[in-house]
Structure formats: structure tokens, C-alpha cells
Image (cartoon, rainbow, N blue to C red; front, side, top):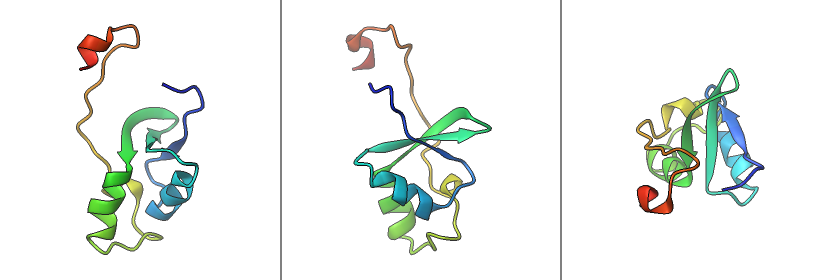
Length: 82
């Protein structure tokens, strides 16, 4: 876990997401009105943007994000996460 989380707005472009990935991170927290709603992973960019020949500057990050997220409480044990 890290304290310096990098996020992106749901309506931002895929291109802007790619610029944020240059910070050597594996995922972005996707927000709507500053509330976390899901994550975007590098695989989303590869499978749902590059492989589908989307226009990175026109298409929004909300069009390619992973919607099904499984979470646990921050104080849960590692065994529960596994």
C-alpha cells in the first residue's frame, strides 16, 4: 500500500491516463467527484484501448475500466486478501 495514490477522473481521456502511468505505477484510482469508484490497470489500456484501436485522445477512461472490484477492509489480515 502507498500513501501517494495517483488518481484520474472518470471522464478524463485514455491519453491522460497513459501520461499518469509514466509515474511507474501499475494502476490508477478512478474517481467521480473526488470519490473512488474503481481502478484502471495497465491491462485495461492494452486490451480495451490498444487492441481495439481506440482514439486515446477522444475516448474516456470510463469506457475501458474494470468495473468488478473486490475489496477488503484495511485492517483485515493478509490471509483474507489471498
